Length: 397
Image (tube, rainbow, N blue to C red):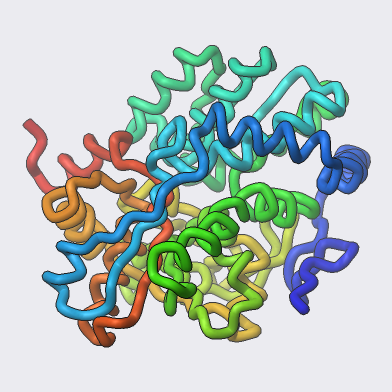
């Protein structure tokens, strides 16, 4: 039986709590609150009601039949998280954490964001529940995700551009942590991925596992059985854990996480922590990280803002080491091609993050028999990426 994490938040040698003493009280308070409510019938009923009536769940599974025929191999199915309210999987987790914040009497919410989807989801639910909202975002991402920045402000959030470090997701998370230390009594930190100190990796996974739980019902209805392969992009890793977790105890289902190879692993300009990193400690947990020869966090690169992070959730590190999941990497160029192909063949504009998983599926499918099935978590829609794609392909009008 799969029973990770343990009581101290460890997934094997990964995870745990590596934070300053000032945050220990806040984390213990959160841990106790989550333990109280995670199986509470009233809490769960409200959570699932919000998912149904506010988010629009369950999200459908779609057979990319034309594309599958063109590739000439395995059948490709897409779990349509892009159809959720706010356009990505992020809203699932944010609702759960905001419900906890309300019950804990925390009127102020902070969050970090890279591509902006978690920031938008957080701003959305704060508007829904009447909570004060501050979102930290690296200034590089503020520029390349201008549309989402405007959406956050429109929803009433204060967006704080972060100018330190590489000015991307890692640095936004650093600033959010500093804010939390300073304002711990009235502030709840909604972390957007399966990283950070315990109980965040477990909690975010649990809220996102609605994705895989739906798939376990939907796939047998569509094809009479579970898929042979489940694919998802991996930045921090919440959309991947959301679809992987319910399938961990199905050994016949192969789990494949797809990281950002950027300009190529050998170039050093990538964000593939599992494929090219080594264990270390960052943002309160032990996991695989991209580091230089001195153990300092290395600079990252991805055309996708949501995958531009030097680490990964600790449960992914455990799944890699245990062999339960495989991790591969896709370059910017491959993701951009998959992005365009998905638009023009299936009429679906995917997020650039999701396009990494789609790209790997397109490599796999022709090598497999036609009766094999690949299920991809299409974690978000690509509206936010129009400017980035236009610049990357030289097609900006």
